[in-house]
Length: 229
Image (cartoon, rainbow, N blue to C red; front, side):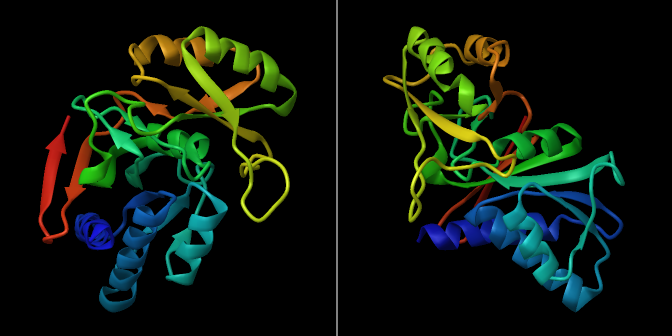
């Protein structure tokens, strides 16, 4: 059921793309389905696009599907970026980062004229942080002081540990990911954003405030709800 919802939003965003566009290619299961749908258009229709991947995983997938891979040095202006999200609220602000790629995702999204978010109904919340912790990418030596800052803001932080490996998850930047769980969601996302970005050792965090231009919400029956900011 959820896979069908993800697939329909992936197909929808792929259909919106025009030849000649520079694209931001997101990371995660929903973005992967969109990259696959885009690859089919490249193969079957001769669609010409260039993609800026937000992770090593999306770069590999893009190359597998015949999408030309470029960098922000080569293409500093992005026509459209697409990506998934872990939560979205009524203002279309997001929590991202379960795939530990939120820093690169935020960089690419900030350069895009359109940032289209691909989700299913389970990602809709009234307050960010209700279901998912807030990911924070940190310099390893700053782990303890950053945890103290998060606790002062009412969160319970934990270092994300690897699966099938010993030790913490390591991002594509070679840094660590901390997950901050807020008991009743994040009360003031702007204050949390400001505090974290002014905390030494924080590279970035998973709050995407006012960045999404459109959220596509897929349903298992094959319909898509479009929300525009």
